[in-house]
Length: 319
Image (cartoon, rainbow, N blue to C red):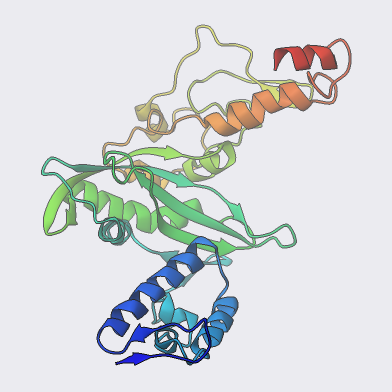
């Protein structure tokens, strides 16, 4: 049996079991389109209403009425807890990794292991409000099929950063210690687990490590050089015969000019508080030193003054 109409643009569709598969394919395509194009739920609801009103196309009639049904939006209560002046939700390392592996259909080898790079930073929602997110993100650097994917381990929402970094990191550190000591259970098999690095910009790094900020004289995270205050900026001109910081000295808080308190991150097993917290290349060089060299109003090569400013012909010649 088939359905036909009198106009020349009619569509002939079989009636029967094939309609269900066609509807599923159409639903999958609409779901993929809505997610990739960031379509709002209200707009998607209007589209579904229009499509379902087309009586001569049976696949449209079987579409859901609501975008949440189409997108398989999870239902149920989310256990959001109050943290300081904001709200906090912990997704979990194990839970997020298992969801990622299931979604990507990744096949793990017998000798696979999980080595995570962790990032924490503030994310403003808009320019018109002080509200912001502070997520704990992670990448699995040891598995090629997953190393480009980012998982959300935890999320804080408030009008400023979390008031207490240790409270913010407590659940993350607690689960990390458990996974490092016992392994991570994926597909009914245990694999080795390790936090290999903590990647943050300088303000976030000092917040999480409970150390002084980048304008302090002893703020370098790698060595014990003392900074100089030059042209309203703290800089570190001395680089020879400088004593480097060590994991042991960090944990014992030997340098009183550097520490503001004890961080819960010291509880992470096999984690070096100096070596496993790398320098932030993007903010230090690309958006830091290089940006200053280019756009400084006095010394900048492009927007500065003579004799520092390059001529237009010189810039054009060397680009």
